[in-house]
Image (cartoon, rainbow, N blue to C red; front, side):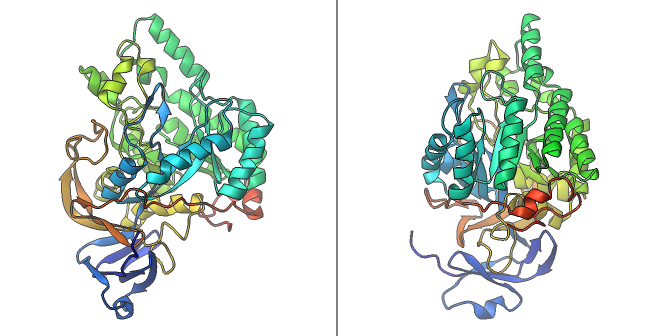
Length: 485
């Protein structure tokens, strides 16, 4: 790739998680070299100029939960690492953390190598979590290799999907303890897989086989129980814990209680769970109802306000999408049996606009809190900070220019994702990106997507140090990232 010219962003209001101020931003060789009213005086001759007057300048979004090119339930997601990250750039997201998911008995390093090869086409920077789907001494060994040699410092545990990738309590205990030894962050998909499987069989026996059965088989209680169980395991072992896609009051409350008692537990919320409710599963059209099948499912509206309050209070820290796109033909595999509908929805392009519109425009979040939950907190929790998640000298030049008065209608007809459905279809959002900057290059400008295949970089992350391991049970109220790598 040709060298990147210097870029000067002038006239905007720079917003970080700590506050906002009028400032110019100078980027050289893919890094931010100056932030302030005098940044222009340091710009080299020929620097590209972006006028940000009337706009916010914010760190590029970090989506800590995506599934690009994922083989799942007998098919593969529509978006690969290029199309998915390109869609993210169009929405202001400049970094993703995706998931390596080994098959049971598949060596972790083998699966990791496959995902690294797939991700070579990414248009934005990326990192990985690796799922623990089985256990023996080779898994114990490979976790060490991943942390110490490959810079993977977070591990995923599915507590659902019985007879496939579900972890039992023995695996949780062994993997959590190993993560603690290595200075890595364990994460969980919290649903009681045994209960889900039982309810699925019971519904099928009663002849309830359509998409409406999906939320019935995964009620909030099964998520709340699993979240509490994982929190208890982490508490006994003294390891911090990150709970992905918190969707209900029960799970959010379990996290809040643990944090109030001094436990280091973190929660992630999906943009979809903040604004979409379970009425979508009762659509008369199978394709529409099936398109919303994901796990955990969308919940009754009352749960949405609880999630917003979690973000406001700080008991929930990050937002994501679980971007996992399947088309109508793929979803149709479950027309006669809802358990065969591939689980997953899109959203990487829409996340930031939806959260701004439903969060900042309603007064639920300030612009600085928006930055915290869309980039800074994820950067801190997954040890990318201060390279990512902040506009400061030395940080990567990943930025988004944000027009708070700009608007658009979200639709599958105009999205850049290769999926054929949009869970936010028809929603008008106010507050949109006008420009996205990745590695100091303008990759999206007023509707013109300039993503380039293979320009994304893999982001190895350092393990957390001894302080991280000691903080497991006692550091309740430190800000995310207060420990040092």
